[in-house]
Length: 225
Image (cartoon, rainbow, N blue to C red; front, side):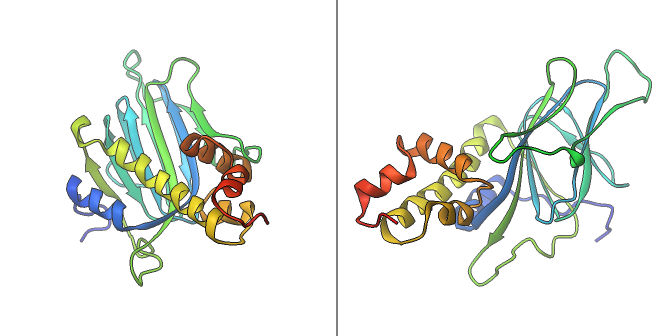
């Protein structure tokens, strides 16, 4: 297979089954907002990247490959350490000049939402980007040998948004089980669930269960470490 071409797209039902079966540990989650005439440069993270376009149309460009069109519900999985950019040509100006934002050099406070903004107006393209490690059975690094993009275009009826949210909530459910049945600290459980900080884990846990992890542990187990 040519290195300049994407891998064969996977079917929606297959992706659903894959997400259900995978043990997914998210290393980093972020939101990317891009406006007309802007280019947002990202990537280089030492983990495969899952990029899901929620709204708007634009393109995702990896090195010298053919640009990947982005439409609502486009899913792109990229190999670890891949440098890429998200572009949105201006409809009012046919020139190829870009306002470039270097997201790779941006720093965020611990626990802060990672939001990359490349626009001085309302964003047109909104993506959710997650860098992850995934395993299946005895395969401890399922996407470790990925050489090129995996691309899939879904429709609103496929409910991939809900599938991805469900996959993330499964991590919180596993954490809840550990709170009631192990002596691991909240910080240890948060790290194992793939959260970069205790505060972000607590927020996600409170959204799912209506209480913080410490309160949940008190009411669901005798372990109070």
